[in-house]
Length: 222
Image (cartoon, rainbow, N blue to C red; front, side, top):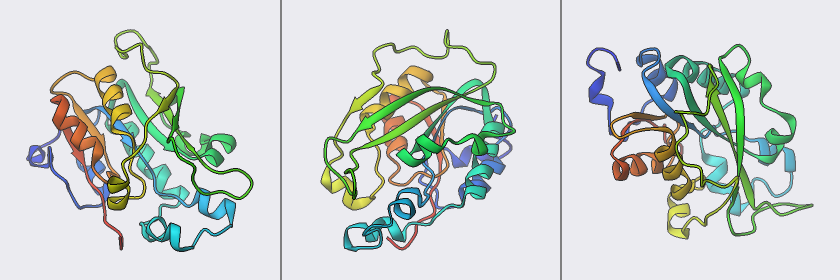
């Protein structure tokens, strides 16, 4: 169930606060969630050229504090069905330092990790950034059988993002990987949530695969 009169939210590019959208959804109404929190982890940690011309698009995006991210994940935990997955994008600093405080007091547990090789060299001072990481969280009870159908998804995924796509949104994510995960974790007609949709690539994947999409994004100054 999505709640009374909330079917009008399906399969649209909503421009509302993601937390407000989450609070409209009923408990255990979502089959899969993607969450790409906009935080300043890399920019602040590297402290090297992070406000320069190359990063002006990234800097202008609406930033999320740790507290806001925790609120998002708490609400995601509430709306996910039992044993459903949340695909959480993180950078290498959060990979090393952990996200325990983000998922504390939820029923979400880390069950796997995918490294996305972007196929091109990015910013950096000591080493140049080429990868991002997708933490795979599952809502308890934890089980693989019946919840994960594709067994050909590698834990290192190589996929380039077209330049024209990056011009639209600097945090665009790989559609090929997203489509594989949607196919693996859902069936046609299931509901896929993305409360911080960015370029709405998850929506595009859902349209191609016959899944219902629920998602929004508050546009910054980009």
